[in-house]
Image (tube, one colour):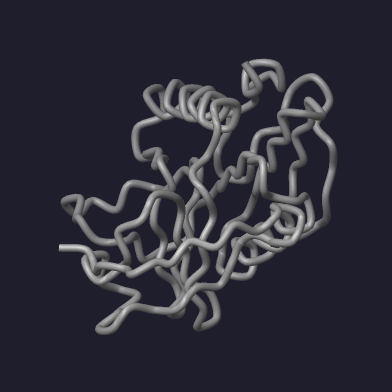
Length: 195
């Protein structure tokens, strides 16, 4: 059972709040145990000792995340040995828990668990939502890279933009994305990711 959270609601103009928003950890919270996390609508991540909250995603972000997941899944079906995670796929590394909009891992050979994954994906994809800035998305991309992910795609629907970030820097994808390291043939059209 998820931890209950008592919330007093205070109306605050959205321009006054920067997301993700740090919130108190509930009594008994353990980052590695999903059942101790608060049960609230939205996305929660645990980074550098802070429980971070983002509001639920909107229609555009959810649709684009689905398009991205579709493209990754179509590729993975033709490439045994890889699998896709989405729906804020939970990743626990060095005490931090992050959620990827979509990602690709090598198949571990172990049965799938109900716990967070304990390894970095080869590719992580983040889709910008209403309350996310490009700066906050780049910070999350840096986290992925620091923990072993080789390529991060940042998808920005409003700008029809996909940024490809690796240890060598950042490039804007033109018409088609370059294949990430270790994921030969994964070269979707930018327009297919954006729907």
